[in-house]
Amino acid sequence: MRLKARFAGPLQGRARPPGDKSISHRALIMGALAEGETRIESLLEGDDVRHTAEAARLFGAKVERRDDGIWVVNGVGGFNQPTETVDCGNSGTGARLLIGAAASYKLSARFDGDQSLRKRPMNRVIAPLSQMGARFDGKQNCLPLIVHGGALKGITYRSPISSAQVKSAVLLAGLNAEGATTVIEPERSRDHTERMLKVFGADFDYVEIDGALHPRVRRSKLTGVPIYVPGDPSSAAFPVAAAFDRREIGSAGGGRAREPAAAWVLRDAARDGRQHHLRGAPRSDWRTNRQFGCESFEAAWRDTAARRAPAMIDEFPILAAVAAFADGETRITGAAELRVKESDRITLMVDGLRACGVDAEELPDGLVVNGRGPKSVRGGAEIRTVGDHRIAMSFLVLGLGSKEPVTVDNADMIATSFPGFSAFMQSLGADIAKL
Ligand code: S3P
Image (tube, rainbow, N blue to C red; front, top):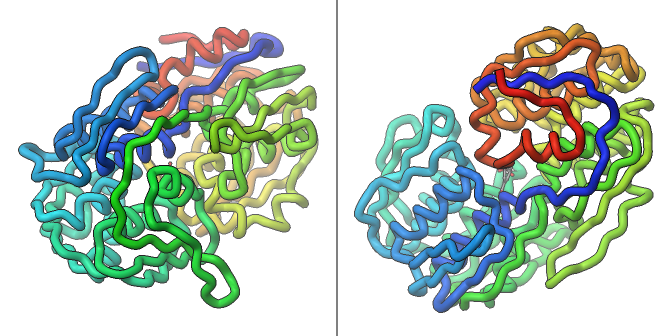
């Protein structure tokens, strides 16, 4: 399905973004590993998470959808041999976390995914899990692959990349390994797994190594718990970025290791942001009446780029789109991981920005956008998305502010992370239409 976005005046309203994708995957996986009932409220009902729900069933858990966003998982205290291939769809998070969780059980599980997921690197989890004792069959470290699980030994893993997916795969495997399992990453990635392991009752703490604290888990039994899933800050970033005037966007997850993207997209929003805790999960309410991209946020960005990049990796496509409306240059570095997401997001953002009349340039680990200033982006292009949901949403938001409409060639994959995106944006006054 092609979608076209055009300027139709300022958006207005109040809305809650869909549930956090990271927390939704983890609630289902940990619920399946646990004994007893995990009742999940506000689960993201996107395609990625639905694949993980199906996987949880294949590994032996009872998974029921009771109502909109209300799911109940009854785990049996571990993973059983699946009877079919575990299809992770488009989801790198689902695949890598499930592979980690499965690796410590006596089973052989075949994992597969769609064309995009089949191209994404799995060696990043195969390497540490092999060190722990798991065995893998497959070609070139990509899906499809078979994991042969069994008795694992805990390790201290120094990950070469800052990745929550890698950290989580290793910690989930460590739940059923001999001894302690610790993960050291160069910069801190999102910490949902750590927070949730504690909530599910795991033997989990932080250990100081080389002057910093790193997550450590020991063999533990998890117990089912109620989980409330907050809104997804990576999804909230799109409507927040599309706000030209006064906007109010419900609540979304936050916390130290999950930078409120909107605070970066509209950096002054942070001033109005209030943080509070709801049932153990940090949340932020964001509101802004600032002008869209009216200033360059380069200086603030430059100070902290590499340190912040892993925690807000999913927000760079929309950040680059917003940068087109800023005055002056925005230089994003320290984000090489963007090349191995659902698409090579650096190349696709640069190509799309250029097609919309914005001067942009690739860097090995990021991009440079020469902002044209507010109200000065031409648009008027059809964008190649390669089926990447965040590329599609970013250019639709760009089209809401550009002089000429912007079309995306395929918007179907938006449903992986933000089901109902068009209707959500329309409810705030956006002009987004099917072609
Ligand atoms: C996620 C981690 C991120 C992110 C993905 C969700 C997670 O990937 O891109 O959308 O839930 O663990 P990495 O931290 O592995 O780069």
